[in-house]
Length: 324
Image (cartoon, rainbow, N blue to C red; front, side, top):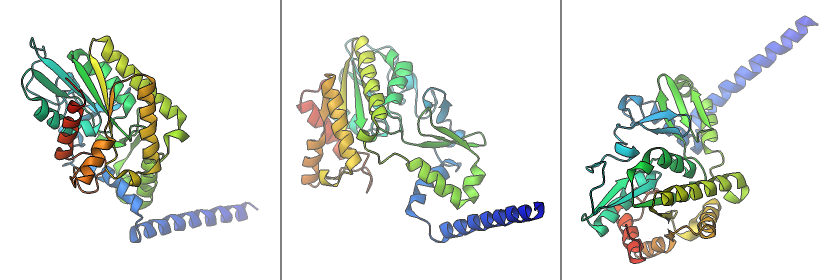
């Protein structure tokens, strides 16, 4: 009996090894499209990537999951992009702080506002952090940016803010994947380097829930709503104004995925329910597309505005009463 049991276990082990090797071979010969999602992980392990620790760009954070290194290339004073302004606000100057994720951080809307508002009497601080969801924006503001003394804080709400965008980088010899503060994974790069099966699993993991409708995730909707209200309250407690720009998916409305359309309706409902000042930019997008304007920063990039569209947004909100 013991010999037969050992034989069965041996056969099972051999079968598992054969199955894993077969899966590895199939994924290498016929790689599914989802493996492209793992490209960010591959980039993070490359020394030339801005996410590599040698550049001192990001660091782990127990509350935020990750954050820019203060004093690094992305974040200077008060956790904002480096600029020429002094810490103490000069008399007679209005200080405008933009917060959000990569839509804010890349600066198209900021540049548009700078062109429309001009330089005189206005400081424009870019406090965006790529990959941040609403609760991270709120906590980052409370910790680093509230002391800036901004007169007006503008949060650009991205319709993917109902999920945390994965950010991947190296921490020593460990590969760190942050989807949120509570979903941080630490992995060894060699496994990603050698196993396509592991890459497939990782890509599936990174993509999990990103296409889920907010209606199916009430706990996430509540987290976003709580963070929005907390951010508004923190800003107004310091005597500043708070405005939300609801940034659209950069495709015609009829081509929006269902979860994006639901996210748009959900955030507008929250803002109206709590009386939060906001601008819905859908009609601005529709006009730009009708006029043939290139609205995407890069081809097939449905999430980041081109400089021209950033300028259009700035003009539109100023025409509708926005003031710094």
